[in-house]
Image 1 (tube, rainbow, N blue to C red):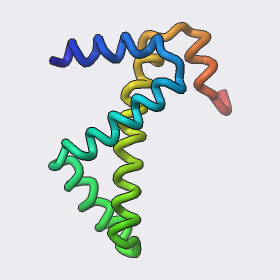
Image 2 (tube, rainbow, N blue to C red):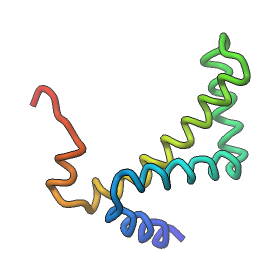
Image 3 (cartoon, rainbow, N blue to C red):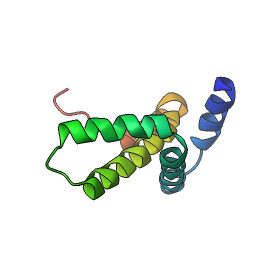
Length: 96
């Protein structure tokens, strides 16, 4: 199963960033809906860390987290298998 996931990420590293971002957003919505145990952990952590936020704001933050997580997972394919110039176009180093 892990090899299949890595193969999919490898295949997706050929896609443009716009497309990866959209796929990541959709995958994040799916993960939010299906990963109930992880969603409960995220909501508990947000409730403890941000007690001033209401439930709606915490839910929006949790959904944004799942979208960002899924997108970053897909974009790691570029870092692992992308060409050096592709990676350099995406990454900026300060102070080196």
